[in-house]
Image (cartoon, rainbow, N blue to C red; front, top):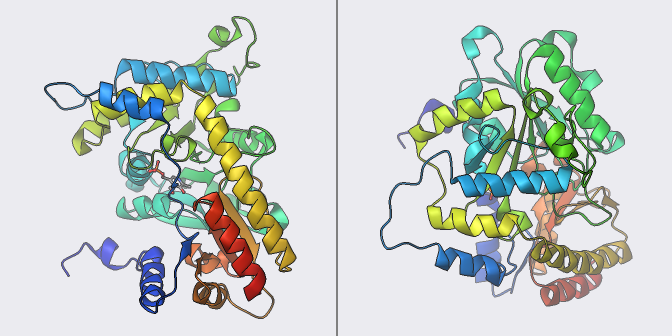
Length: 401
Ligand SMILES: Cc1ncc(COP(=O)(O)O)c(C=O)c1O
């Protein structure tokens, strides 16, 4: 294979291994219920689908990479409603083609390796895309483990003093894939304080921010000095968003919130200096979402009803699986938000061996070890199959274990 050395050195994307195992079991005639990959199988709300259709024009030209002004305004309005933080749609938001491409290419656009600020911090187990982007950008990667005893938050005090000056980007992802852990606002505040002290960017991947169950989760966007209580009369306009979001960049997406993985629509928001860099970089790669997708996205960010309905569906599936897992004596860790359940495998078995045992019964789940070394000892269920399939899976689990 002709490949860049960076690509050649990368391990096989772990889900490819899972796909191979699934194929073998399916060929043996077992019907699979797939909790493996976090691709929502929920319907996209009809108002969003209609907006997509209405957004089609007779002729089609290149979408501008800064995104439609009305989409940037809809996103800024959503951020204001959800987090009580005023951001400027002209200078603090860029719509993206889902969040994956933006997360991947972020290091390419922002890291200056020869300057000595050559390090990108990531957490593991985790979504591998920030790390992969860093490697393609020639950066050094520092992996921090997410451990149950720390609430699956990285232990900032365990980072050696000499490292801080080298950090360029520090990726965090809460609500977290795969652990379902949430971060308190105090964690973002502390990380933002260190980001300003050592001049790195706090990169907060908040793809699952809307899939909460016990109440809305915190965001790095709330760290802003100028954050105001949602609904405070006229307060949002008083904040100085440019100053208050210094060194903070947040990545979000409609994929999970609005069950729109196939549309490819997300955004990056935060520090205006960084947004200016992205606006300079992005025309080169040409990953602006199609205009009709952007028009549908305006409707999606402007509506909360469909999000509440999706949350209720996930809550029902979660209850079914949680009760079965507990009946089987399996201990569920974190799993406070997102559509993932992060479950301890029984003593004396490995993540992969346990996943194979479940697979033989027709249940696909992801071995935690696929998601990073600290994922060993866990298995991840993505609550994406429909409720009736979750109920069948619960019965199979009770039989099998
Ligand atoms: C943690 C995390 N971030 C980002 C993404 C990217 O989602 P999208 O590119 O669909 O916006 C995913 C997708 O699974 C994810 O799990």
